[in-house]
Image 1 (cartoon, rainbow, N blue to C red):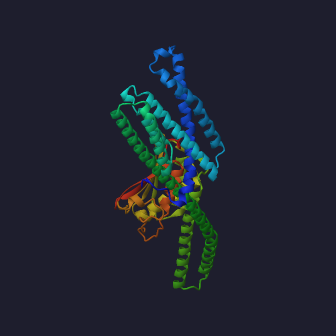
Image 2 (image 1 turned 90 degrees about the vertical axis):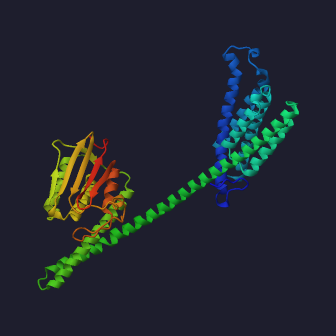
Image 3 (image 1 turned 60 degrees about the vertical axis):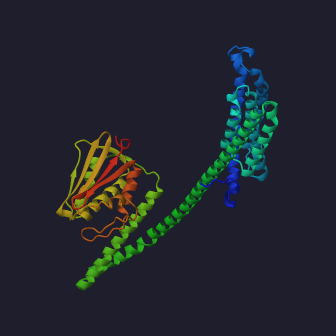
Length: 447
């Protein structure tokens, strides 16, 4: 962050930032004037609350008149600030009026601290203390352009120099107090410019984030439109190609080479359809912030999935299911969670060599949480790839043991769905020793 001691904000952001900080300034005037009024009111009421005589309180008479003035002036600023906040406009005239009110209140605040310090000069420890405090408050709570800060500093220094001789006669004390005032004004200017620069930098960062979010929204809309085209305009032609290939295979006159080509066409169509389905699933999961869930017995749910795989999904995999003795109920979207399990089991089949080593699906239940493990004993995942396996279009994607291709979306979809169920998915793996994916549904999801 570059501190702008004697410069303004660049043109593209200046007007927006000015409107934002002037509104904040007016809100600070409202808050500070209320606090100021409360302090002076408490000062006035303390003798009555404690049943004290004025003579019993040291130097009370000196502060009595300034306190009365504050009780009259502070509500004026409070009312003005409230009205300006309620009717805030970003017109040049209104913003000018708002900043004038802020400048007047800052000068009023500083002058109050200055007068209080002068009245407290009977005690050397109190000299310029309240003056310093009000300068710091004005520098921290209000945002000014550098020329406004300079104007406040100059006016304050002049006022201090005019009033000081009426309270300090000794030339040495006069010079010390004058020097202290100049140092405090320089500190006020420095703090004020730092606050201005910090808030300007913060404002620009927020503005940039808002603009980037708008760009992302547009990009997401374009992505959704493209995926809609993919879903409608690619799936139908693929289905037609696959249907024609199936009809051609019925012809007994085809030679072996033509039959192999038709099989390749059907396999390519199937692969393309799976890719399209993965793209659409990923897009739907991005768009669906919520989905319907049902109370489901995970034990039976997993058993049915494994049975489906054994009966119809593949003949190359030996899948074993280890359930629990008692039902384990969780709130899930069955369709989406089935997609999760299908993806994990499919990966296990792809990277374990199928029947050679077997696949285990198991369910555990502990401390109100449900844990699903999908374990294979295949080729495993190299340690350098593990951090990226859940990334979309992950660079960690690899070919299966039989050369199966992957586009790197399956595990990304798994994590999307599990996360939206309020759960987590973790992986443990070692090369040539196999891989275990664990889905945990947290206690709020289990019952």
